[in-house]
Image 1 (cartoon, rainbow, N blue to C red):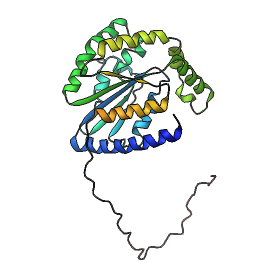
Image 2: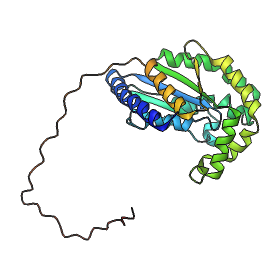
Image 3: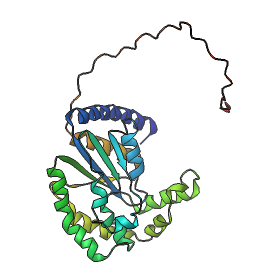
Image 4: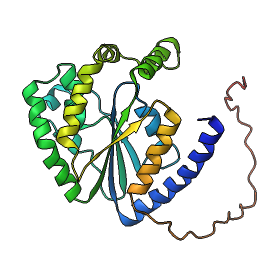
Length: 255
């Protein structure tokens, strides 16, 4: 997809997201959006496209670090529950409680019994979340092995992207089919009627971003609120104000 077509489509979707934001605040909606997928599938870029023109006080992104020693001793879902939305909020999880079904399982950070316990209980947990009035949307970004290889290689070679590549990414890369099996088990256990999984083909990042935003807009009913015509007021007159003779430390204008 060409850059111009992408930018034109994204501009229209961003305008509609602003309408959605106002509606969420007006109606006190509670929205929770989960993004999962393999490393390099485009989760971060999709979340950025979704949030770059809306208020971070309404659209809040949650990307949790590795659990602390105290959090490891808590009930697993406990560290995620406190981030669920209140009225007038859209909370976006960049990876979520499904870490237990994916990364933790494949990389050996939890036992098989812990994984099975999670898969057995997560449908009931999500039913409780939805029953409390939360609109829950779950997206899995699916990238092909060839495209994943290209993107991870690009992270190695591009100094702007090296921060995205972790030792865990390299270990995960070699376990493609272990992740496939984990994904299949996760879908089988948690693709419910009240909280279904939506799969996003993401080999073309631009199309994936647009399709996700469009899907979000279609699955959160909203209306445009009446808007008063805005007019800038007149500035006050200078009066007796005089610019101070102060040695401001100006930055160097290199560009």
